[in-house]
Length: 229
Image 1: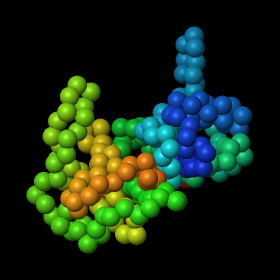
Image 2 (image 1 turned 90 degrees about the vertical axis):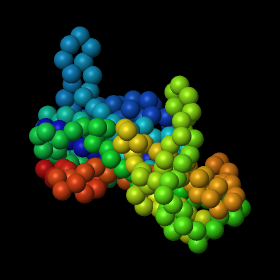
Image 3 (image 1 turned 60 degrees about the vertical axis):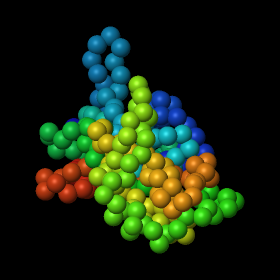
């Protein structure tokens, strides 16, 4: 069966890169004795695919990866994995996916973020009263760096929700392969709109959740497509 696993990454583990996280979970599967399926051939490997890489230093309460499971229940897999997790990693849910559901990476449509000042950093002069004016503009153009050059890019259709209060920004933004905007790009443009600027290193990014579209074309968390087993 195809299974979707949701996990949190925080504490010192936020400084571990994506490739090492992949290797970490491969070892955890063996250590927890999870009955995961392997590919065929001369060099079999665990059938496992992650939703999206998480930047080094970013905290997350909603990361996902899919595996193929040969046997077991959601509770047994979750309990077994959590028993071997290090501090800063936690399994939050295990769901069975119905046939025909795209893998986690291909399913992503949006992501929710909280971005807040790091402890000890001075508050920056950004006006929370200008959020509505910022969002009501016809276009929110930025210069976006691509692999080959720089292009002008309109953020407006890719920002689904945005708010700011007490030095914490909250947003729901496009995370699909065709959009995939960065939360700091939104914040930097908002600061420019307010006539100031931010220092990106002063902020802690927290990815709260990944979303996909359900049959009614409504945004739902990736885990919502699965069911208990």
